[in-house]
Image 1 (cartoon, rainbow, N blue to C red):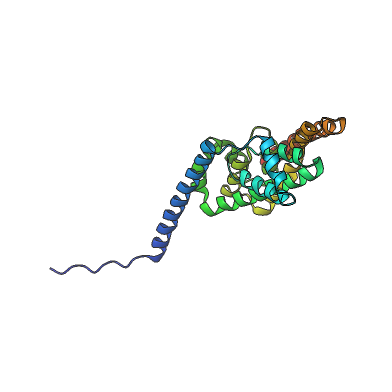
Image 2 (tube, helix red, strand yellow):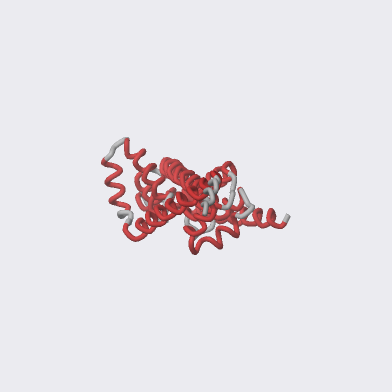
Length: 229
């Protein structure tokens, strides 16, 4: 009785299998990493961040941007970093550094999501999946801007959701930049007001939050109009 020859292996099938293995491994690493961050990492109080950044001298600017970028890629709220920016620097410098830091983190998270793939990131988004998918599927600039501006929606699901649900890179970056500036300004202004409770810093807080409210309504209505076309 002769044995049948072994069937030739399909290289495409082998490649797909290895890609699946690598993605699942990456998913496990990312999920475990984010869970560890959520349950074990807590940003120090603002005054501690202030002391450590100030101790670095001119390099404190670089350290602040780097730390902010790292925070923006995780589920840790970015609020404390923006407020710290207002305490450490003035409103203008704090806003610029905060925008650079948060944009760097958003950009990194977007490409991480693109690399891991849609099915992998859907599992990672968890309870945020429905909201993010509803806004971002087949959407672009105004959808990202709306989610960035709405209070209560963290940055990280928007970052990873945009990469997962096919938002193109250029609209994502532009929408993130345009929409994060008023938000970062308003938070930085709060920090500046804490450091120097003057009429000027109080006015900056009011202007920032009014701008966030107006832009949120405008972006939402434009997004709904685009969806109905």
